Length: 380
Image (tube, rainbow, N blue to C red; front, side):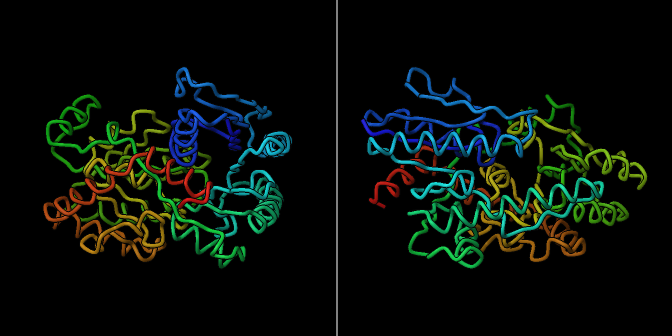
């Protein structure tokens, strides 16, 4: 059996890169010729059933990523040295562990500098931490044998910003759990609204994203919402899923703007599939998005997503859905225009999204994992 080592902060089903990491680990655990090792802070072990997985748990002091990151990197290198002596393969996430085999890149820190509105002392600390992250990212990704990219956007950022030769990169898109994120028919939507206690006589506009900084573009959406709610013809209700340091501030500003009855903040939720089913359209005006798994999940349920054109997931949009692509994530006026257009052309857009949704659901997490394994083994 060949040892395979995956080094990642988390292998969980809670979305983003953690969900993708879990899918790859589950696939490898089921291969008869693989001895799987995970160096991680947290893992959903129930996913693997009877399949043997060797988990090397690393502490995350105080729950802080910045405190756990060097411990994860050290443990990853130690395990990698031992397993490569037995012919093992090593896949790290981005620059989280300095190792020159394979890096799976879900996010390029050099591609975006977060905009935060926190206290000045916190901003100084964030800059110092960011400097270390950028240095580690450069050092790791310039030396890897293969960089697996979750989108062409990520691939371009590696080539242009970190000078990684394109010949050492490979684009492999995420998959999906087609059962959990299946197409939403009218009956399913009605049942979801009833379960959540949402009225059925207004369109629900969904935002899913962290509210710790401005990367996801909620500030743009907020200004858009203020504008739209002044219009007598606009009947939408905003539903916000996500948490972070700015959540309380946005809740207060919503009340001050007199929009308490036009927006609901749900915080962190685990029933995302049901919330999507109860919604009518999603908005994702991110300033930087290497891929955008949240938008992908919404699309797989058959709902339109207004997404920034530079997001990785936008590469997969067909020409018929170009009206959903936001060119300027800093423009509330453009976002308002695209939401009005969706409201006016709702039936046509939903029909086009149905076809796109069917296409996205055909690619499973297992398909993604198999493509990664083939690429690492030099077959793809």
